Length: 380
Image (tube, rainbow, N blue to C red; front, side):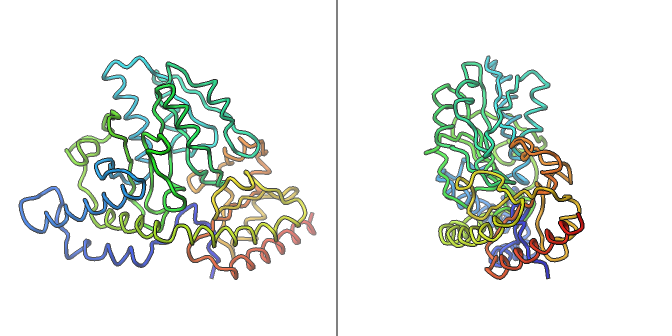
């Protein structure tokens, strides 16, 4: 059986989440929007309980939560929704700012807006993956409408200084959007304390089901809906709500908060054990900041080997990747932003540890990688 070490791509749905969802698939299947009979009212109540659970995880009121199909949809609703609402009210601000290491779910809608009348600035990062805050301070100004910076990078695990970014945005009157898909459930986040106006999350990154997520919005932030055809979610996201998935999302957030500190501490120790075993190997270098990163993330590059051959040797025993699952094999723009070449990016390994990862998994990974490198270097 493979040692699964790709938890940034997705996490297994927790058994307790599956149990919470089960009745809502076939026993309590009513449409929560009907509201004219008891089963529908019970479904609606279940949705609101889930809404409260998600909101509590970010220190927000329940009404801040807009349910979506995942973080990609949440990002699009946040970015395009803010831009369209600004146009509708005649807002003179048009400038958008983001970072080169963002997920495509932010870079692509930002690029689309940049081609449709919203000037876009994409800031570089330092070699360790961190944003130079002076670059942001120089870029932000009275014409800036919105800044989007992710909390934790999906490839290199780097944690940006959200508090400082939020302060800069607030000082200049710009909205602050944060893609927190890789952070929610894995580290403490309080939107208000960080001056975050809009935050996106996804269920399947925190041991919940695929196909559900949320956008959390600070009161007073104007959004234009990006999906029309119904009045669900306060008119901001039309479509029948997937009650089982939302119940699962709420339960997953609740469970993640309960074991967050213990899990992070344990996985950090395992991650450090993995790095201690990899670092002495010839040509291995760390991608991303050594300390300012998720406790369950490690991304390494290996010089002098062919990336395709490397991953062919690993995949029979390890589930790992060389980058984002959404890149579909394309060279990582995250590693390129760090100054890595296409060849170096292809010969990188992203390890994502998870709730079920054990010391035996780490030792197995070290053994498999060491053997693969020995074979590759011998053939070279």
